[in-house]
Amino acid sequence: MKDINHSFPQLPENQYIIDTHCHLDMDAYYEDLKDVIDRATRNKIKHIITIGIDVLSSKNAVKIAQKHHPVFATIGVHPHEVDGLTDSDYTELATLYENHKKQVVGFGEIGLDYVKLHSEPTQQRYHFKRQLELACELQLPIIVHNREAEADTLKILQAQGNLPRGGVMHCFSGDQQFATEIINLGMMISIPGIVTFKNATKLHDVVKNIPLEHMLIETDGPFLSPHPFRGKRNEPVNVLFTAATIAKLKNIDIEEVAQHTSSNATKLFNL
Image (cartoon, rainbow, N blue to C red; front, side):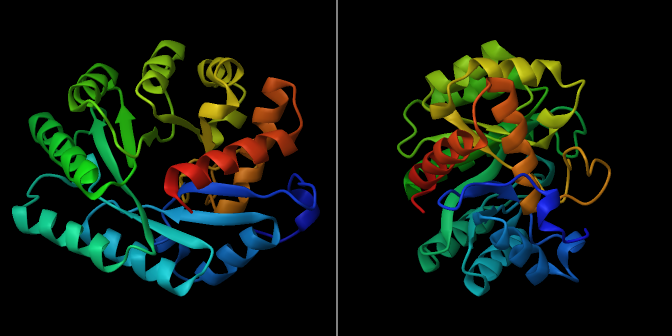
């Protein structure tokens, strides 16, 4: 990405934004990770949370957080990766948190994905429940992945009951009713760059209707680049375009979006 600061939406001097979901350990950032992080911080992205998707990814996320001060990590196993998950893997995840509490701020991403079905649905549900239990045991907020599995996702979350540290439905793709159900569980709704797409009308309606007090923002980089970078590698600085679109949809200033979503992220992840 060409680094021209004035091409990004601007925040006031005393404001900043937090990208609550990115995958900095992926190969897309291998050659220029430091530049990606520096570009974000120069443009007032104060923190980036890099997300674990399996045991190795979780370890790599922690290593990145140790090396780069603006970055925090989460640990967990994505629904695509749960086939073959073992007891020793669960022990390893718990130990990773116990040994790196300064870096690890959440558990996930975990959940259900009924679109690609890289893992068998019964295995997805079993390990979603089991990872939820471990997250609650470790007193970590959860980061939940859901694709076309709203009914089962809600059922499992509701059955779990109290989430001692809350959580977030990441890369929200549901409707207003699902958003309300998630908020009623005490969780946050995270808005991705998809909100900048003209045809994302369902997500536009959700953004217009849910209070900022229940909202986070994310890139999900390197995926889902917002307009005007759609189709290119996504990176944390692009969360500014998401914030600007939310502000436009809610008819408020980007400063208000930054203030609320950053405060929400700071509280949820204890940053």
